[in-house]
Every structure is written in structure tokens, then in C-alpha cells.
Length: 355
Image 1 (cartoon, rainbow, N blue to C red):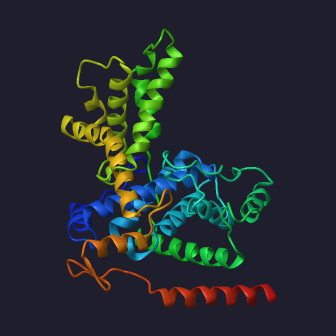
Image 2: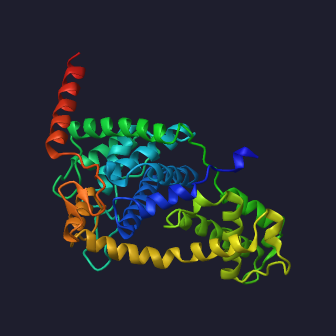
Image 3: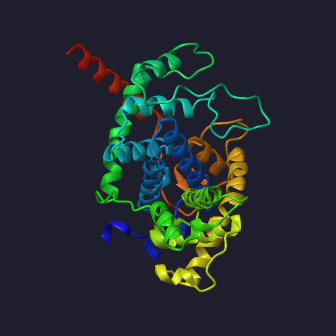
């Protein structure tokens, strides 16, 4: 049964992350929400299965449980975890594909977190999955540079170096334990065991099955964004039961009158907590989008960056140099060091190509 369980966060880890961290809790929530959404968007454009992207979401949450959010650029951590999980799966992606997709998502022309009240964004780059993917995507990034993002050779080399470095850091921080058991298959199995798929909607059994299963999976995917870190504090059977319960209530399916969740070793208190947590994600997500827009100070779309967070902290009077209000050090890389590292990467790339 070990393959059906996950390592859970300890109370001390959760307390230290939320109470003793260098960032206010509301900023931690904004960073977590935006980065998890970025990972989901990248997984979609890379045409990765949701199981792969969801595992990347869980590993990212585990990594930030033991490491500071401000230690590295948020998008780089997202790319590294997604690349790592895809590499370990049957759907690996190349670093160049990851670089192109994240370059697009982080550009001003991206539809990521697009504000519907502003002008519509241009269409996304061609999807991945065909033999001509790399050529087509590269041409879309190099043509019409005034309207589309462009990834230069030196930019790719720098991204590639950061990607591989962060991949190693994530593995080391997690103790090389990348196992993630997802509750999605369990939810479908439990629905079948309880004969929930006999539910009829609009006179069609098939429609009822699809509606119930789709709603349960939607709750499980939304729980990946929860600020309560539900995937780090509860095992997959409990998450699956809570998603089933919420989905059945939404679509009007008749549930057993007995306390059926106890069959799956879930008590009423845990079920109630998870149901409330899952059902509150939608409203909380809308609030996070609004708060993120304020932190980004007027940008219509795009991804939150460390620079945005540092600026917000200064506006709140919480930063003096590299200090935060509680005296903790923020892991902020000096701009001069970044520039030196970039030039070194370019020089190494030139030497490698000459050889």
C-alpha cells in the first residue's frame, strides 16, 4: 500500500512556513497560487497528461515547504519541477521545449492571467506533440518579434543552466523522494464501488457518469491550488472521498444514507475539513487574482516575479536592504552577480560550439 500514500508535512513544518517565514502570509498565498497556475498552464501547452502536471504541483509545494520561496525566481522553480516530473514519466520533454513555453507564458503577449477587460492577447504558440513541433514553435518565436516573445541563444543557455541547477536543488531538498500518489484514480474507483455511476441525469446514465466523475476530478485539480496545502496534509483516499462527496452534492446524485466514507477509512471531521477546503478554492482564487494584479502594479497580464514581491514588501515598509520585518534574510541574488553568470554561460556556450 506504500504506493498509495504520500509523505505528509509535519505540524512544525507548516507552522514555520506560515508563521516564521520572511514573507507575510498573504504574499505567500499569492506566490503559491500564481506559480501553481503557471505550472498547470505550461503542462497544458506542453500537452502533458494532467497526472504529470499534478505531480509537479505537489513536488513544488513540498519543495517550498523546506526552502524559501524567495530563494529562486518562481517561474524557474515551476519549470524545474515540471521538467523533473516529466523526465521521470513516460512523457519526457526537452529543455528547449520547456524554455519556449515558459518564454511565451512570461511574455507580455501571453494569455496567462489575461484581464478580460483589456485587449485580447494573440493566440498561443503551436501545441507540442508532432514531429514538426520544435521547428514550428521556434519559427513562431523568431518571426514578428514586435508581437511575439523571442528566445535568444544566450537566453536559452541561461535558462537551461538554471533549469538543471534547480532540478538538482529540488531533488536534494526532497531527499530524492519524488513519489507522488494522486487521488484521481481512487476517486473513480470509489465511485464505481458505491455504484454512483448508476446516477441518471437528464434521463441519460452516461451523462450522469460523466458529470459526476468530471466534477470530482475538477475538485481534485482545484485542491492543488489550495492555500491549506491539502495534498501535503491528507492522504489520497481522504482527498478522493471529499471530492466525491462535493461532486455528488453538486450534481444531485443520491448518496448512501449511512456514513459511507468510513468504509474508506475517513472520519467525519476530516471529511468536513476537506470538503470546506475544496469548495472554498474558487472564491479564494478570484481574490488571489485581484491581489496579484495589485502586487504587479498595473500590468494587464503575466506572471508574478520576485521583483514584484520585493517592491510590494518595500511599499509595506517590511524591507530594509535585504532584511525583512522579522529580521530574516531574504535570498535575493544581486543583479551584478546575475549579469556575470549570464556572461559566463554565454562564454561557455561559445567555447562548446567552437569545440
